[in-house]
Length: 157
Image 1 (cartoon, rainbow, N blue to C red):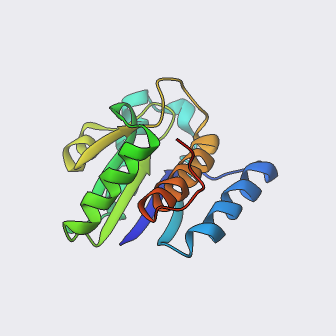
Image 2: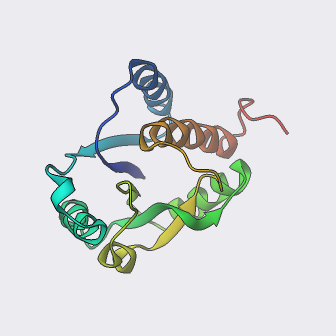
C-alpha cells in the first residue's frame, strides 16, 4: 500500500526536517510514504477564512483521484492508540486499498468539499500542534504502526 501525506505549506525548521527524514528512511522497509507540500496561499489578508479554505480545497482536491482512500488529519477525527492505528492501517491494506492519502489542511481547517471527499477523519491528539510538527508526529506514528503490524520491538506495551 502506498501512503501520501498531503500538506498545505512546507516544513521550515531544520530539526523537524531531520526528524521527518529519519522516519522516512525507516519507513522504506515497510511502505512508500510520499510527502507532498502544497504551496501556501499568497495575499491571505485579503481573503476570509472561508475563501482561504475554498482555495486550499482546490489545491487539495486536484491531488486526489477517485480510487484514493482519503483520511483527513482533523481535530474532530477519531482518536486511536498506536495499536489501534496499526490495526486501522492493516485492515485498509487487507481490504485492497492501494493508496491512502492523509491530508493536513491549512490554519483554518478544511472546506466542506474536502470533508465530502474524505473517507475518514483521524485526530492525532486532542491538543493542537503546529502544521509543521504534525508532519513529524504522523511520520513517527506511521513507522510505529508498521513495526506493530510486523511484531517488531519498537513499540512497548
